[in-house]
Every structure is written in C-alpha cells, then in structure tokens.
Image (cartoon, rainbow, N blue to C red; front, side, top):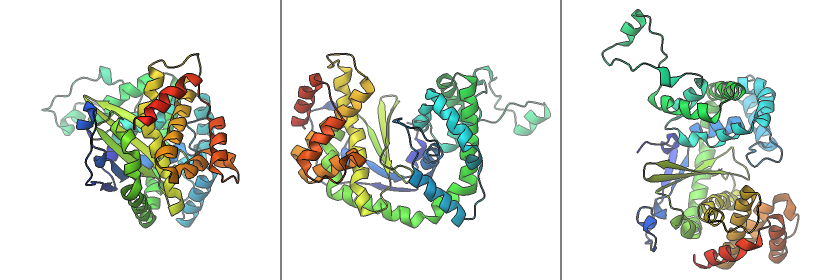
Amino acid sequence: MKQLFWGVAVAAVVLFLSCSLASDETLSRSFDPNQIQILLNPDVDIVYHTLAHFFLPNDASNLYSADYIKLIRQAKRDLEVPPTKLDSMRLELEKSYRQMPRLRFLNLAPFIADDYASFKQALLMIDYDVEKERPEDSRETLELRKAEGKTAPLIFANAKRLIPLFRKRFPEPAERQFVKQFAECMEDEQDHFYKQYREARSEIDQQSLERFTQFWHSEGLRVIRPWATKSAVNVFNIFLSPVMRNNGRGGPINQGEQVIFNVVTSLPETQEMVPGAFFVVLHETTHRVTDRLVEEGRLSSPVNSDTVRENLVFYADNLYLKSHYSQHHAAYLTFFLGSMSGRESNVDTLEKEFIKAYPLPSSLIAPVEELVKEL
C-alpha cells in the first residue's frame, strides 16, 4: 500500500488503549479504533494555508478567516518576511477561485497524493501529456540523454500518476492556469515563509498536540468509538491543523481493498478549543455512517442531498451526545450554532435552535433515531 504524504508526520501519537473492541460487523475485524493516529504535518497545512487566503462567502469549502489572515500577516512582520507571491496574487487568484467551482477539489486533492513534492509537481505540470511520453531506456544515463538532446522533464513517478487525474478534474485552460499559479504561490510561500513560521511555533504546536491527545485518551476515543467501528475504513488518521478554525475536512481514499480515512481539524491552542476540534472529528466520522441513509434512498421528496447529508450528521450527533454523553451536549450545540447561539445557555433552548438551524426531512428522522439507538 502506498503511503499518503501526511502519513509521514512531523509529530504523531498512536493511541493504544487496553479496552477490547467487539462488533458484529466484518469490517471491525480489519479496523480497530484504538489504532487511530493523531498527526501534525506542515506539508498538509501549506495546502490549506494557501486556500485559506481566498474568501468564499456562503460556501461550505471556505477556509478564509479574518483572524487567521491577521495572524499570518503579523507573523510575516515578526519574521521580517517581505510580501510573498501569494500576497501579491491573492486577489487575482481569489477571483478565479470563486468563479470556477471545480477548483474546490483542491480541498481534497492532497488526499490522493503520496508526497507533497509530487502533489506540487503534478499541479505545476498539469499541461504535460504523460500519455505521449516514450518509455525510458533504463540503460540511458542523465548525461547521455542530455548529450542526445532529449529534453523530457524529470517527473516523479507519483506525479505522473496524478497529472492525468488532475487534467480530468480541471479540463478548462483557465482552471489549469489557476492550479499552476496556485502551486507556484504555495511553493514560494513554503520556501520563504511557512517552513520558517512552523519551526518558530513548533513548541506551541507540540503543546497543542498534547492537549488534544490528553482529551482523546480520557474521553475522545470512547465517544467516537461506535461511529468509527461502523465507518467501514481500514486506516483512520486525524490531522490537527492551525489553519482550520470552526471547520474541517474528511476524505476517504480507496487503495485496492483498503479504505484510508483522513480527517483534518483545528489544532487547539487553548484548552477551551479542544472540544470543538473533537466535535469536527466526530462530525466527519458520523458522515461515514449516516450518509448511507441518504444513499439508500430514504428521502421522500427531491431535496439538496448535500444539505441533507450535513443536517443528518448534526441531527445524529445531537441525539447521540444527548443520550450517551450529555456532559458534552450543550458545548456541541453551542459550537455548531456559533454566533446563532447568542448568550443562550439553556440546553433545551439551544437544542430547539439547533434543530431549527439544521432541519431534516421527516422521512429520515425515524431511521437516524433507530441508528443512534443501536450504537
């Protein structure tokens, strides 16, 4: 099995707890939630750091945060970093990013790469026609190729695999121009700022990692175990990223008979941020189970299936925490209501506002309630 590039992490904690796992599902024999890894990897974060500079109003894939951009600008001043290519091209790229919806795939594209260098090269060389490339003669040396005037670029094997995938995802010339500029800005940002920035804050990052893993040991794994057991994955990785705020990313990768599930959530820099980071992981994990209710055709009328999938997760986790871990119920409601929760602290009122904010078709209520009862 090929290794995802964030599988080689800067810091990793593999959590082995002594409790045994029992399940009547065949998939549980190939996946033990005790093996979930919690990771840090700046090579993952630079992708999202670059995307976080583009503001997408009312878009679920938006990573932009005024607080994050303010933090980064101050860090560049502190490190005496001159304006980067991303700084100078941000508005131009943001305009294109808004106008071309297929570019949102960049949020999940890193999940199909084996390493950051190949990912970046595949974007930069998206116009290169791999299919027309002649097979290389293993007896030829680089010097001999140069002497004979052979100018085919040196491309990582994994990049050659990715280029056709990206060409299919981004068929329009304008889209390909964007991803090349995106990769150039990402590379420049990494070289001139981000690598130095993450080294400077390595102690903070380590403390934040430890803060989350302490919660994971004491409560997190126990809470998420029933959903993770039913998630039909073989490998499960959690990435803590300082780019993420009140959102996250979750993506399954099929590699042969293996399903690798990667979740990106916020790196909690304070104790108060830990529950929110965990709730995002819970949300993405629950998707793996509740999405099946939508796929099974449980809808009685045509609706926006993406919205239904999201609201179904919210409804399921609301029921689950209310019935199984009530000590986290109010915090969960408040976190996902955000500013909508105002100053309200009464859990019953919060729940009413929550259900109103994330409505669910009536045909799905009974199935999801039954699902939660079985956990």
